[in-house]
Image 1 (tube, rainbow, N blue to C red):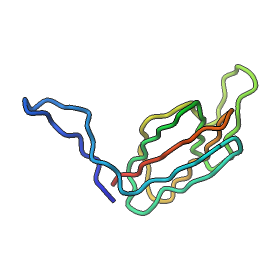
Image 2: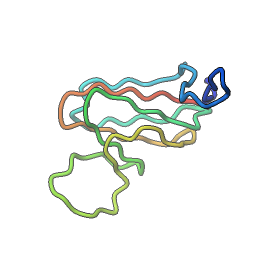
Image 3: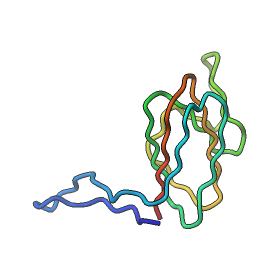
Image 4: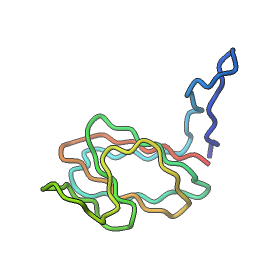
Amino acid sequence: MQSLRIHSGSNGTSTNAITPADTFYEISGATTNQQLIAPAEAKFAIFSANGDFYVRYDGSAAVIPTSSSWTTGNQELNPSIRSCVAGDTFDVIAPAATKITVAFYA
C-alpha cells in the first residue's frame, strides 16, 4: 500500500499532488447501502465520485436523509479524505446511480 505523500513543486511549495493509490475500492450504482472495510495498513481513505453520496462511519447502514434535522448519526455528504485504521467500516449510499471510488493509503 502506498504512503500518502504530498509532493512539492520546483520552488519547494506544496502542490497538492499525491502518489497514485495501489489499493482502492470502486462502487457502481450505490443506490442501496454498501459497506466496505479499510484494508490492512490503511491510514487514509480518499473518496471521489461523479455525484452526491453519503458515508456513515459507525458500522450502521447509511441512509438518504428525508428531512432537515440535527442528528447524532455519524454520516456525512461527499467526504473528501478521512483518517482510518484497518478494519474501519464505511457504509456508502447515493440518491442516484453514482460511481464512487475510495483510494486507501498507509
